[in-house]
Image 1 (cartoon, rainbow, N blue to C red):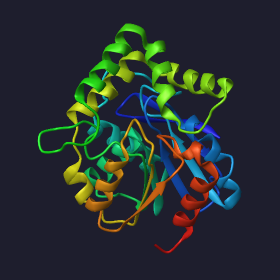
Image 2 (image 1 turned 180 degrees about the vertical axis):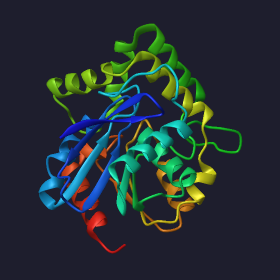
Image 3 (image 1 turned 135 degrees about the vertical axis):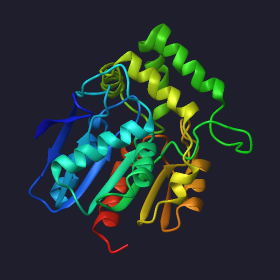
Length: 272
């Protein structure tokens, strides 16, 4: 079931809500440049296991409104808070992939984990996606600048190139086109502005503030968010478990979808 929640006064956020009658709830935040549709292979399976699965399309992406402003992590975390309040969610698992993981981390710090019982991070873009003084990990800043420039110059070509490094397992051409079309659904300005946050935002303090049990799933072949960032997240988050996915790149939720779904379901249902 899909519907809209209005946030920030007049921005309509699309919400996909499966199994709303179920108590065990997982709220998914997608990565750049996608939408909730990236979690299709979780939404196919997890509701059958008794989960309510909710996917939010970040403003500027998917079926949500595409305003020109509001793409910093604070505002995006506030959007999530407004959806949580509108749906009356409590005791739910917050799950974020890539930039969605960074937004989830900011939510935990900025909103003191409001309503969240557990956190799941999948290749989260944290604590910094780029290398910085004293932090020699992540991507070169120029790599991100090239993505931003490519967005403004030839967004379809940029998206095509990004898709080529997103997955580790073989994907068919029809699947590649499906992924490409999801990226095209976003606004160009939103695509560029989110990429700019990778340069502007850091989440070291946010990670240290997380107190709930946390599952970290990270593909060891990730070319977008290097695996070492998952290891650093594990070091910062006290009550965390790191699952290294040996045959995955940036999309463990597809590269090893069966194992991914199993690990997530066990974590969501378990006592820790």
